[in-house]
Amino acid sequence: MSAAPEKAAYEPVFTGDRLKELEAIMARYPTKRAALLPALWMVQQARGWISEEAMVEVAEILDLTPAYVKGVVTFYTMYHQHPVGKHFIQVCTTTPCNLCGAEDVLAAFLKHTGCEELGATSPDGKYTVVEVECLGACGFATAVLIGDDFLENVTAEKVPEILKRYQ
Ligand code: FES
Image 1: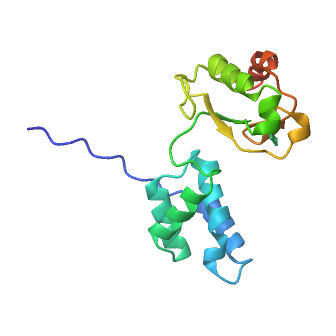
Image 2: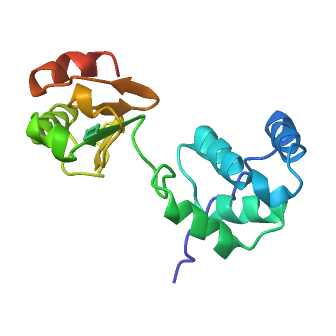
Image 3: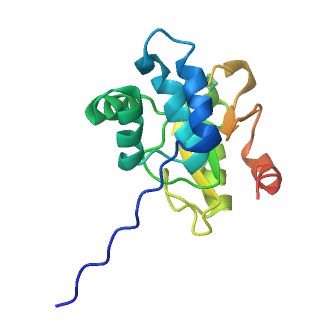
């Protein structure tokens, strides 16, 4: 019987300059734990998502339990708990956007990215498309977030052109 393949060793996120940056953030607060949200954001910026191992690493640095960190990660939808595409596309489908064709915009993003379903990543690893609640731009429906870019007045027809900017 052959041995199961060994899991790749976890590479810590917080080393070198990134650790110094986190220490500088922690120094701004009266307690270490107050730096939890920025620490998690730094993990996501570095790795694209937040793994269980990264949660343990953050917990150790901030003197928290891994369960507490996981509770925070799972509470906020902005934290990814699994790998996502290079471009994370969030389409608002709440009522005002919905009335202006958000469902068609969503369908166009799924079709033109090759994502087979909501939340799935395209086979080329470039895109993940999700639907979200109101993005706070109801007067400019349909509102879409691609990474940190906020797009307004998106229609299904504009989607292929938009995607050319996100390759
Ligand atoms: S309903 Fe879409 S941005 Fe508010």
